[in-house]
Amino acid sequence: MLLSSTKADWFGNIRRDVLAGLVVALALIPEAIAFSIIAGVDPRVGLYASFCIAVVTAVVGGRPGMISAATGAMALLMVTLVKEHGLQYLLAATLLTGVLQIIAGYLKLGSLMSFVSRAVVTGFVNALAILIFMAQVPELTGANWQVYAMTAAGLGIIYLFPYVPVVGKTVPSPLVCILALTGVAVYLGMDIRTVGDMGDLPDTLPVFLWPEVPLNFETLQIIFPYSAALAVVGLLESLMTATIVDDLTDTPSDKNRECKGQGIANIAAGSLGGMAGCAMIGQSVINVKSGGRGRLSTLVAGVGLLTLVVFLSDLVAVIPMAALVAVMIMVSIGTFNWDSIRNLREHPLSTNLVMLATVVVVVWTHNLAYGVFVGVLLASLFFANKVGHFMYVASELDEPASTRTYRVVGQVFFNSADKFVAAFDFKEVVDKVVIDLSRAHFWDVSAVHALDKTVVKFRREGAQVELVGLNEASETIVDRFGVHDKPEEIERVLGGH
Image (cartoon, rainbow, N blue to C red; front, side):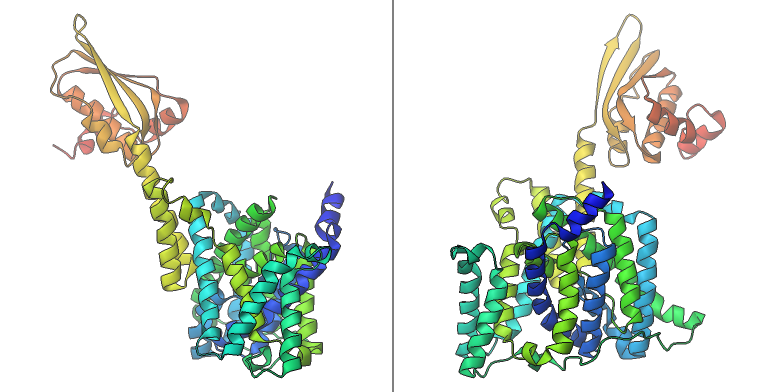
């Protein structure tokens, strides 16, 4: 079973994986250079990192077909460290980032993705689509008419080429776009910005490079805050991207294995002079849209990137940026969840607010972690509020027996605890109160405290209180934290009054 699964991951889609990997390799080059510039390091640092991370995650990652490399979200977190302490400390921080991510994998923190609602994922996707598009704007601002014409032509090729008989479905249209526009630009001698204008491409293979930093507690104090931030953002972006690729390909992935894979990849990148990276939603979408599905596509992307920049740098340098801008615009259009606009009328207000808040925070801060944190927090608050409303208490009086029976239905927890207490009439004169909890569930200490308060108040009014129907889970937490049957604790429940 394992052998057949491994064979399918690597060799189940060879032709399309290879072609898709080549498209991604070409699209990775300017991005890796741009992210290096953002971080304030030599372009080689981003290019070596992208090669290394892609190759390693192809082998040990948990999501086949996902592309991991140097990213903008990670680069933004490195700026201050590089500026204040230099490249060597960045390499050390990258190694520590990898260690923290491996630990997260063994702690099974990948399972926390189950707490991220669909609205947050949708907001995350839409925000990234907007950021990908915004990143292309500088290339089009103040450009000459040739750039606009080339970009428009590139988009035309990308969207129309798939309709060409036979070859249209065989060769990825983004690859055709890049090759065709490069040929036109070279043939006509166009004076437009090229990949070579982004920075010097490396002319050697990466070599093992241990960071030249003192191995002491002071170094750890410097790099740990950056490594922790890089580890969190890297895993967050990688796991969110894995979820999106799961949806696009309708296949599952191992999130905890992905955490470990990202960690191993970052340790390898730091050892070869590269910066920390993570999964890239844009490149992953390019890969999937170009037909890439298996681990081979990710491996080809990494090896292809290094081969292109080291051995074919003269050819790569003449690729017009307009061609890559067209590819990235296609990615932003394809990434954006257009259904989410149409669903604004149909979905509940709370779902829409979570999605929009995630988009606004990510786009405003350019920090994916902040956006997802705000989205998850809002989703949790809305959920707690909604569940709290479903708790109610019904009652009936047996006058001959002077007994009032209260039937509690729903979830009792911190948000509904006050509502629970307010549902009882403590001033009613009865001999006995029966509280039927067979359709209720007590979740936390706040709920238990509310039950204690209710029982003690009834007893103070002279009523005998009987609790019935408590389920096993609720009984466990009530027995552990409840004090209504512990006389020495009762005064504390009511604050000593």
